[in-house]
Image 1 (cartoon, rainbow, N blue to C red):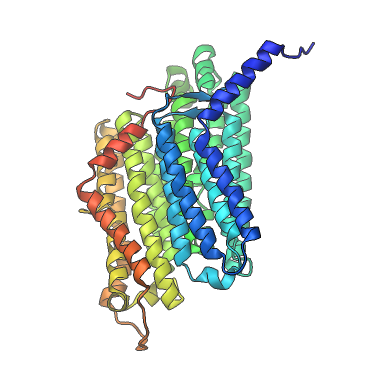
Image 2 (image 1 turned 90 degrees about the vertical axis):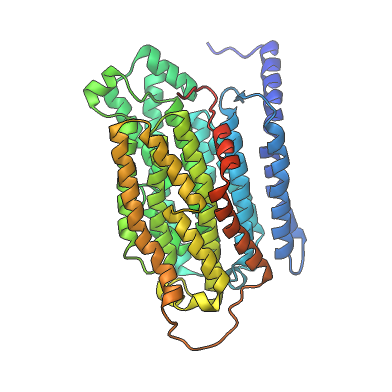
Length: 511
């Protein structure tokens, strides 16, 4: 017979919730910012888009203070183990807030919003909502919380992708994203149900304990692993869960494309690391002998396929956004190389690579927006002669592309160097993975350099002379991102230390 909790138990629950709320301040603050933006949009009159963008920027910047305060708090579980606060979560909170700030900045530069959208209130509110969801993804320690946080991010991403309602490409992209997202979420939930059936637990630490103490059916566990990987693989855009990425990246508003390719992808990796590092065993004689593979083996296959497929298919792309979409698939493969190492150095390398990817990918999309403002095109052929007409944009885009290849003296080189160094410490199999990563990077050099080739070595077919200067503020932002990409390629130690700090997960001791 069901018994109601006693008064003492109720008081204990309330006390636990109050204690948890004290560690949840950044999320509460961002939720209030979300509601404030809706109110400002309703109340403000006239030209309110500038007010909305400034409010969003100041609000997101203000959340950094509360995250900074959290760094002094002890790591632990919140809300009865559904949520955790640790160094890993703190790292990604900074990452996602800064991603939101940059997404707002590049949105302000995109002139297409002026013709397509009257009011930006819902847009900026959704950007903030997506930041909240991604922060929750990085901190989720329970399968129910994982699902809820992923759906919050997914639904906001669907709406942002189709935000240009009168644009057929944007609507098509949103529909494809919704269909693929719904299928992958269903597969992931089915995988969760199998794991719950094996363990009768939803908490990741408890799942790990139950699997190690009571054993498991390896066939069921490998099936559950595959299904969960389908959900996470969709989020990170890795092969074979990548089908949505090229069309969505091409059709979505360019700032949304940049936001999805950096922040949403990083959230997927954060969730993947926390789930598989903590919950699911990656070895063991029974598991290995019967099935012959484990989740690390699956990630190795996904990583190799992503690096090869993304880089090879990008060779034929003529649309710059679509080219960067296939590039993003390839980079998912590179990031997975750090995860499969399964030690502290590999995790540090993964986080550092995400930081480098943050700078160079946001920078590349920012320049693409500025060029599209002046040319009205995203096609590679229309970049001819732009090196002379837009010298700073040409130089900045070249630096970002060199960083995406992974060449010195850029930050991207340091990211790949750390990933490959982590692989080389693990033995001969990992040496082959490093060689595949290097060879596919060589392939990427060809299609990345097609852009500066057109900009500098091919003449524009049009002799029309018009002002191509994007303006003072865009030039400053572009130069700043280019400078940081080069600066951290030479003086990367502070960010490497920050990545090392972020590689500590609650409930796990990495070797």
